[in-house]
Image (cartoon, rainbow, N blue to C red; front, side):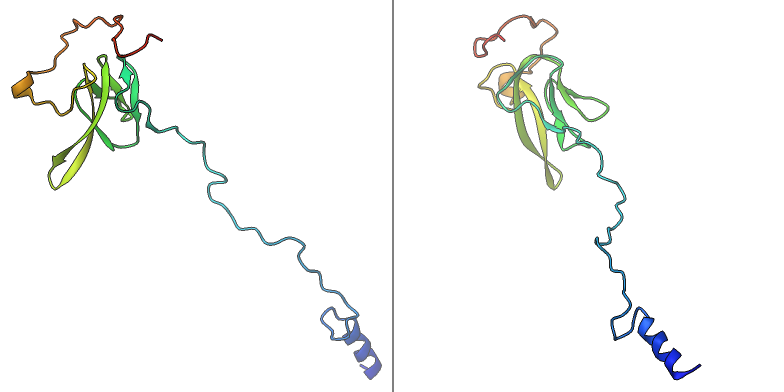
Length: 144
């Protein structure tokens, strides 16, 4: 190969220092890969009825995954750990010692001023026996 052909070949190379060739560069940055592609919509978990709010049977008080809150008086837990009311009353949140830790509980009281956990030796057990009139409007709560 002649010297002339060698020089022309170098000049036409895209990596030549003479700049006669061109190198294509990216016009956009390289995008990474995403495993979940934006995820899924939120599940609307959390506390739905707060302390001192009046609830009727069937009202959802807390929607949760796992047991952040445990059941107290007059509430039950659904199979997806949803805590709901089984009697009319006012919502109460409280903590109780459990082993070396404290557990958070949700319960219902019949009157607005009552506290949980109840002192059952002094006040007696809080039982409804299905004699509560579900249509009755409590004085503290406006009818809605």
